[in-house]
Amino acid sequence: RKEVEQDPGPFNVPEGATVAFNCTYSNSASQSFFWYRQDCRKEPKLLMSVYSSGNEDGRFTAQLNRASQYISLLIRDSKLSDSATYLCVVNGNSNSGYALNFGKGTSLLVTP
Amino acid sequence: EADIYQTPRYLVIGTGKKITLECSQTMGHDKMYWYQQDPGMELHLIHYSYGVNSTEKGDLSSESTVSRIRTEHFPLTLESARPSHTSQYLCASSEGLGMYEQYFGPGTRLTVT
Image (cartoon, rainbow over all chains, first blue to last red; front, side, top):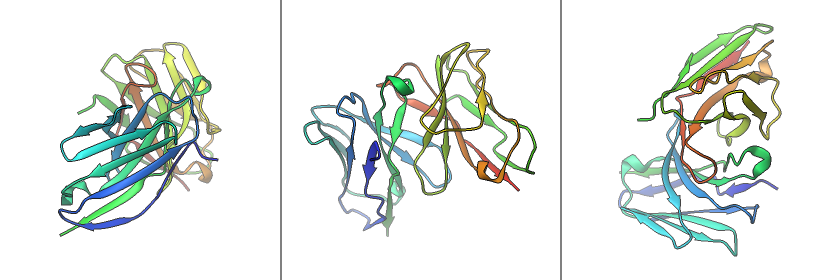
C-alpha cells in the first residue's frame, strides 16, 4: 500500500469554480501534512501546511481528519493560474529521516 | 525564491559514463534530500543527510551515491550511467525535520542513451 494516495484526476473546471481534492495516508503516526503545488516540468513548491483544526489561506482551505487519515484541499473561485498538479505530502518515519512522502498528485486544469 | 541550485539542468550522456549532479543551498540548512521523479509519477526519496558527514539511503533503492562534506553542498554521483537512470533528480533542503517546509531546486533532467 502506498504511503499517500490521491485521485490523479485530471480535474477540468471552468474559471470561478470550486474544486476539492482528497488524499489518504497510511501511517497513523504521521504528524506533519502539507499541500505542494508542482507546475509542469518544474519543482514542487509549498502551497500550505495542514493543521489539525483546518486552515485557510485566501481561496485555499485545507482540512485534516486524523481518524480517517484523510486530507483535503478546497480551491474556491478557481483562476487560470491555479492550473497545476497538487501534491499531498505527509511526513515519514525515523527510518527515512522523517523525510516527506509525496502523493502522485492531482492534476487541475482551469479553463476560460 | 528558494536559494537552492542544481547543475546541470539538463544532461544527455552515454551508457557507462560517470556523472555528478550538483546541488547547493545558501540557506544554511542542515537537512538535505535527493528525490527521483519520473514523468507523471510521485517523488521518491533516494538519499538524505542530517548534516556534514551524514548520509543515508532513502526508500527507493538507487545505484547513486552522495557525499556531504560541506553544509551547503550535496552532490549525487552515478559511477556508471545506464538507460534505467533516465529520470528527473530533485534536490531539496529544510531547516529541520518533518514539520518544516522543504525547498526544492529546479531539478536535473537526466537522459542516458
